[in-house]
Image (cartoon, rainbow, N blue to C red; front, side, top):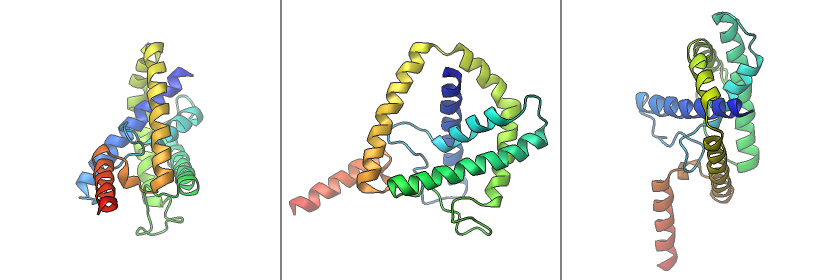
Length: 186
């Protein structure tokens, strides 16, 4: 079970990096690009890759992995978006500006990208991650479980209260808090 947690953390962190890079390349005004308050993680990537790794047959070729990756990752993306909408009342992404989107949650353009990226990860990244997962110290994993749980509670509470994913950075949260306290004292 601990190796799956390492997979989740690794790919969630890589997803965070990919989101930051993508935001910089397209010069997005939305720069937070994560789903936790403190940790640099995008859990949709970790969940999608864990699901894909559980489903892709060993020795699958690149094209089968890409097809499965596109389907599995897009399915997970849809469900995670639905979860964030229903539970927290927030959206971390919106594909409504792209053709053939499904309720802004998924679109074929990103399904294709997820397929290629996930197949590349299965083929070239996962063997290294597998070695890291086997070597991970159980004590470190317990500490990471605790940190993730605490961050998850703070993040969930913040999203439920404010319903604003832009606040998921310490700087934005402090600015919002100062602005709120100044307006209440005026």
